[in-house]
Image (cartoon, rainbow, N blue to C red; front, top):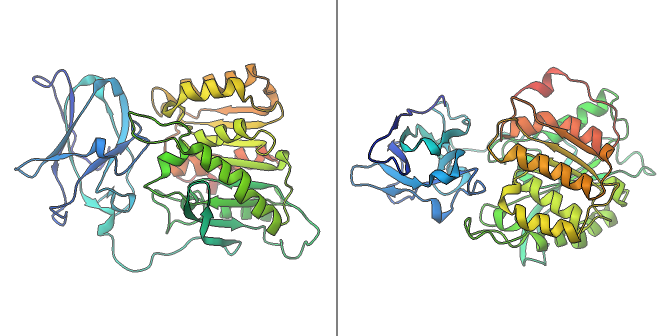
Length: 391
């Protein structure tokens, strides 16, 4: 927990759990609404169903049902740009609580992300990353989105070389710490390192599509979730990837367009929508990286969909999550591995990992990316170097 003052008081609140903030930074705008975002609401930083009530004494609180069980969460002022951070203005580990213990859990918010020093932040992208379009049109959803592309360092020199392509969600977190809302994956540095050390002489193209806070859950959940009050646009989002973005990338870059060389990957809801994409378009997306996939958001509907839209036997799936990320994470991920194998996916094409220290955070997904990439695209077995183990 580190940053918080945390106490649990049972008694009159025995039938419920209250999250209470007893102190906020003095620069918190009085008119701002505070929210709790967590594993129970797809990490939506502005979900009105999870706004806190402000009391006359300056405290904030929200009552949550014990049916949510063990949760991870953070407080925001309605955006990841205004999420709580530590006294050193660094990102915080997720808060954790088991709501089945019931009672009142009290917290202090030390400072908000917006309180960081003003001015431009240092970008961490390598020269191989460039903008495809700051406002790429998504006709299926009538909105626009920034799209980035990573090209191998010698792409321009090897004019006859064609490359596999990996499509990644939450693009602002893929390459650049300055644009990330919770830390970057460092995919550009990882691929540069693999190439420099001879582990991946050819390389790959990576296409990263930004998400936005307003539509992320809608686009990454294929069916509407009444409890979350979100979802239902995942089908159109995947149609955009398959019918609009991929044809554009194939036309403008030297890709290997067939399914064995086309991957899709993401974390949490991004892992969920990646699996869905492989079910809906098995002849397009033949490689899937599912990092801490949030199957809980629509598991029953996705299972029913898989019955009529089975994955191709040759599709490769790389599953990874922390051993104790949440109560449902590992059981559901295990069930999906078994479901896919029962549905015809070859066992050799299913890679499954649950490290004991894994967390629902970018440092963990960054650490695991090298192994996922190597498995999905037949790259040389990765070297477990120090840089990869850093959190």
